[in-house]
Image (cartoon, rainbow, N blue to C red; front, top):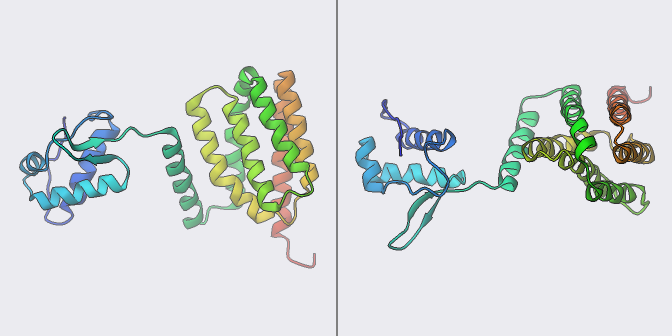
Length: 243
């Protein structure tokens, strides 16, 4: 294990140690499932007390980067991060960034549709019958008059996550699905009183049909229709009441 830690200050030692180990994990110098040195070894290496090392390890465990195991073969081990855990982290971070930094609604719309536009050509090539079935299922949910607004929002996210999965690229699908999970609920929450659910379902159906036909131009045109309608709803939302 190679961890560089040349500068130690009197304050925040546990944070610095945790950051050094985290960087080693992120840079691949510490592999998944690799066992970390013991607390005594880390204490000697960093020139700090074992209690400081223990606090650093607690920080890393709270970030789900390491886990502790008991027994003769136990110790602290680097966790293997799953796609689901990584996506949850990315969704949470994105929502926090949007919520805490006053990101304009229009910027969120632009980012969300730019990402999907770049990925849909791959979905056209790689979509399967299973993907098409998933899309049709969500459209049926959206057309059901018994579907609540909350359920419609969830179906909207699931529909676009299915298009992301249809790209056949797990890393791209991960990034897209996380973006949809983070941004789409926000957009739905802000405009759900204004939107025409049937109009959205119609656009989704046209998009799914074009995916089935593997017509890239039509798929992108329908996504552009959805983008335009979302911007239209955003503009309506900005209008003063009574206008």
